[in-house]
Amino acid sequence: MKIDSIVKQELWRSVATYFFSFLLFAYLNLKGYILIEPEVILILAFVFTATHFSLLVWYRKREQLLNPSISLIINHIFESKSYEEKTTEPYEKEEISISSSIRKQIRLLTLIILLYIAYLYASLVYNVDQIFWVLFLLFMGLALSKVLYDESTEENQKNPMRLLIFYVIACVFIFVRYLVLDYPIFPILKGSIILGALLVILVLGIKWSQRKQNSDN
Image (cartoon, rainbow, N blue to C red; front, top):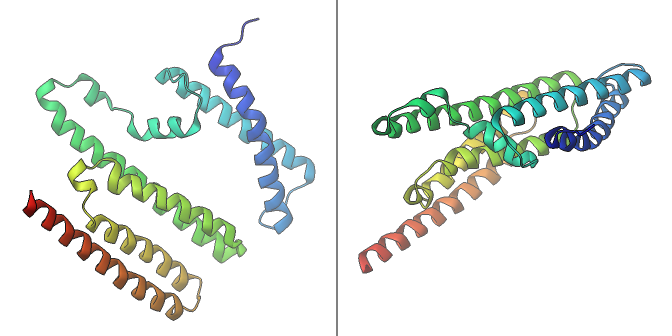
């Protein structure tokens, strides 16, 4: 029997998915975040893998995504066109594109906030390890970079003020975590102020250099 190429690719991906999901559930059980029997871990890992497999096969077939790269699939999810974009007249495409871009950015920001709230809740209830905070910071950095830069014009992407916006948003997430978890905030506040001052100087230097370059041209 000939197996569909997408199904075959996702079956191979499911091997790694099952392995890592098993390690994740085993780690959570070992740390006491969840209290389940060892055999239940196998079942949970299988259910998670089966769900992951089914969703990816369904989505890739619907969108005709032949490339198995998970990063490309995730990127396609956030950048896929809505029905309005696919059926609109040419003269309406620019307005629809702008609204679609805003919706994608809102979805990303909503996802970041929901994950952040879930992390804070888990930290208060289960005393979550620092590794999850590091993983969230990495995800937040990538997501905010996508929001601030990916949908911008080339001119806006060169605007150094976006770096300050990125820094301020990141600091808000960090400060709220310290306040909610009752960590000493003054040491991190001092470091943030110093780094923020250096970033302001850097941004001003870049803006001055850009203006000088434009005046020379």
